[in-house]
Image (tube, rainbow, N blue to C red; front, top):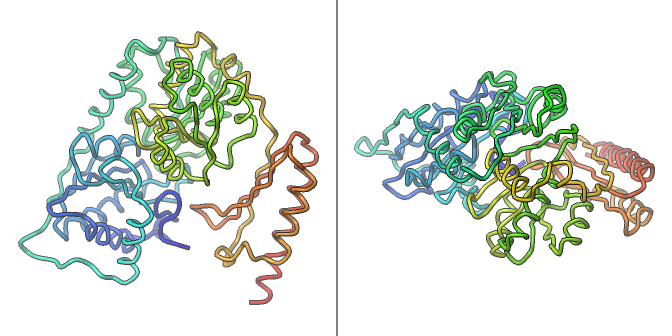
Length: 448
């Protein structure tokens, strides 16, 4: 696999992602930066976070880069802080929604966006070749400890955006034992919104475990039990959010995009009346937007591609079904807390409950399966018989269905997605595709 996937370099800490690799990435990153340079480093709550923080700080300062350690902050907070402190770049230590044993290293530029592929490729080449800048005893960087003192800058900014724009009905928040615990309660308190916070302990060994955006069913239980009007669930680094309505409906990124798009459209603020989403977004979103006079532009999977399309086409709103949403007027990257507050402001503007606001989105059933690729990751498209199986499925589902196969950007998996009105048909074809892919993999492995 390449060092950098769709969301940074990621792997199991102390196995595929090591201290040596983190040190090498820091050195390769330092080579790409001007001098003098300052890099802000943040992390989520994972147990391995401080270990990688130390390695990155050492590798950067070794080559003359000043390092500001921001401590536990969400990825979008780090992205904001780079600009707010006039730093040259940022590095986030997080594996986002992945289980506790994983960790990752994300490179963020001074505009708050992920480094582009060419910049990441330059770092990767340096890591591969082991070619670093010259060291000098006269040009070492400083390591500045600002744990806990930088997050309030982000808190104040978010609160200023939504003061007076959201109602103050009680909400339930699930911060998944992750970085949102260091920001979400404070922002809601500043806005005068009563919030019950679930899984608030910053316990890295429990991050994302049966909690947060990957397990919103637990938030649903609490919303129903407390009679709350809204619940918001964040992932480990708080760059994505899922919502729960008063009736217990789990509202994903597609439906959040719809509500935000309609509110912006009504205000005349939705640039070109277009929304950006990925190939994974549900056909129901596309149809609902069409009825409102709003078009949908699709990209490959990954918020990197959503962000790039927003930038290239001068658009304002985009996101993923998983809950990564980019509101370009405020941020360059997905921000779960910003998105949750923007959703609340949109509902207030529309005068609707979340249930009523998402009712027009009639979702097409989807089936999602994962198949482990092992050593066949790079050449999965050439697996024997795979193209024929996909063509058969597409013919069977017709215009009212879709078939999508894609490799995961963070794990050695092939993701299979089928979508259509006929649930039995997509389930049957999903099983056939899964079996066909496994047979193809076995055949390919046998020939090695």
